Amino acid sequence: MQQSRHQPESTHMLTRIFSFRGIPSSYRKVDGWGVHAFKLINAKGEVTYVKFHFKSRQGNEGYNVHQAQEEQGKDFNNLTDDLYTNLKKGNFPVWDLYIQTLKPSELNNFRYNPLDDTKVWLDVPEVKVGTLTLNKVPDNFFQTTETVAFDPSNMVPGIEPSEDRMLQGRLFSYADAHMYRLGSNYQQLPINRPRVPVNNYNQDGYGNQEHTKGDVNYQPSVETGAVTDNPQYKATQTALSGTTQQQIIAKTDNFEQAGVYYLSLTPQQQDDLIEALGGELKKVKNPTVRQAMLSHFYKANATYGTRLANWTKDDVKTIQALADKLKD
Image 1 (cartoon, rainbow, N blue to C red):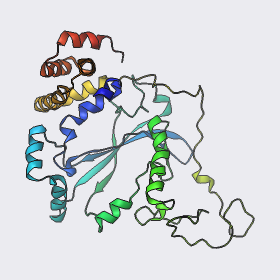
Image 2: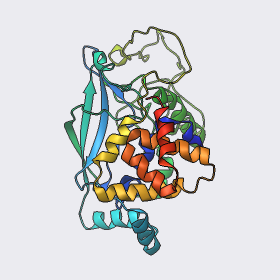
Image 3: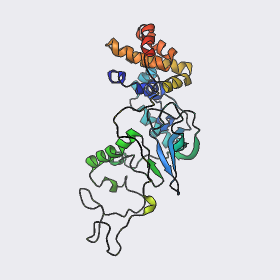
Image 4: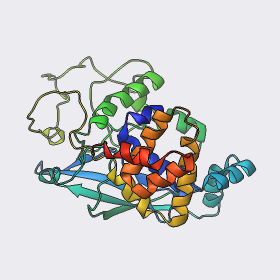
């Protein structure tokens, strides 16, 4: 909470994770959100910004703090047991994949920046494009999960990263972490290996499993059979203007979406959110920090902030006055 006081952009995420979505009752009943925006590139090189969203056909369910204590008191491994039990019964969970798309010319049509990954794209239609069915677990769970290397820089042709600032950092940091953890040739491990042939001059090093032939390990080369780049898979060019910077996003809109989400909850879900989040805020001993946080939630929605302030026994008028000084 001390850190979040200085990061009002966390208001939306805190509201979500202290709601029923923060403690799922089943892995089968959780949506999958693509936090970042990406780019779809067609054969003409035209760009469309996209967000991905896997929606569970099993619905979304979660525990409140009392239910979580009871369930995990009976079975601390309840989520894994639920998933394995249902898979053994043939109750395979299904997720539908939806996308939201925006043209580059539409990025400035919102109160927030669509490339800000603390935001969802409100009022942008979703289109179903596929379905995912989970019908098995890895044959060797430990081996697979210990060597798998999820990395946002691993993309198929036709998908590219957007200018999302956090994504740009993760493109490097995730791959770098895997290289340190699994070795320079981690992409050759069975779980990470592409399903199509890869032709490049990467060779040798720790864990190398390829058998490069010949003495050419550079390009371009006049040698017969030398590997050349396929221009079809070159990244698109993006025109840039402005200056380099290290500052916050200009259009922050830090509070609105937390309020929208609060109002989307049922009355019981709202009650559970107030109890869960209010209980944690009540533990904050520094009143300046606690009241600053309460003002963020009040700015998102006055009823939301008032109920939290009543829970922590802070003066609502003080919280309102602090909220009035906040900028979106």
